[in-house]
Image (cartoon, rainbow over all chains, first blue to last red; front, side, top):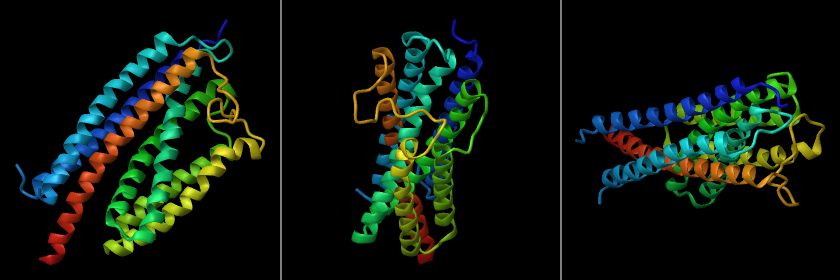
Length: 41
Length: 232
């Protein structure tokens, strides 16, 4: 019978998604700020 | 096509690749949860493997490319290499955060501890700090050529650490398991696990490509702004 430790798996999957999506969104925000600063549409 | 147009085109292309890669990552979650078997001794916690290992591979790929581009920059003095190295370092640090958080979450139920100061873990942490330092150094230096030269040297030093990290499980006594795929003999994994791992690795590399392309486009925009500011 495998050990009951699914909570750790769920935590790791959530943490991974949060880190990667947050970084991607942060990058897009920096790009849109850079575009605004140079007066692009 | 102006520099600004090409930067915007890069960001658009990188965004498309990143969106596809993030959707594919959701597919990896489904594969890992529904397709792969539950490992008998480790239970569901073993499924962290499908994220932890590809994140570690992608981070090491990113850091290796920083070192290679750094070395090439010192030789060829091409600013595109410096821009790519800076972009790769930042994305590598993001993947490094995934690696260094999923690792302890996996270690706790299996080893009984979040962290242990063994060779593989300690060297990986040092490599991560080295590239955080690389980004801090870049932020602190204003002169573009000085920034590129100094950070290229740090990138090359980081590259020298990568083979030690891969070989550390052979060179030192360590709790960290030995490689199951990147080793001289055939991979020692059941086919469902190996397929899912390979799909996940491809998705992480695709995500790396998308994020680096956006970051490269941003670097072009930032350089253009710096040049306008210096000219004013």
